[in-house]
Image (cartoon, rainbow, N blue to C red):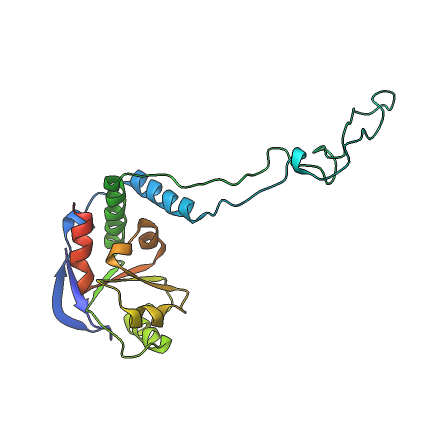
Length: 209
């Protein structure tokens, strides 16, 4: 698949990037995508939720009314879950939501996500760039030139670039990552995926194994 390479002003450079069909042209596997996104979201959960159950409530243990003759149900403790201020039945407990997936499945999911974006014409290849200083204004001008100022965008760099990353950090609709940080969720969560030329070899090397 051939994609025109543009500069940060949105103008074509006259070059074309060859996107590997083994990464950007596969038949998407929906179940692999589902599992990888599910794992990503599960890993974001802290799992620190906790509710007090009956045995953990501080309160009197005396029998609050006699066993028989009241015409109502028996009640032995004010800490019972049926009373206000009582414990919670089967309340949440701290737990770990993460689960494992094998590497081949995760690679398939990422290839599938990139192929979906490629089919939707939502992948753009931009020549490598850098900023002299850290300014949000610099990155905002790039977004406007590429027509991405009103869209969610994901910029994938070949290697970490502090000036570009910090210039984009204040913008909610845009995220900058390196090729090694690429995930299925981040690909699908963006309206447009912007691949810098220097990231292509790393992406294809990581996902074509």
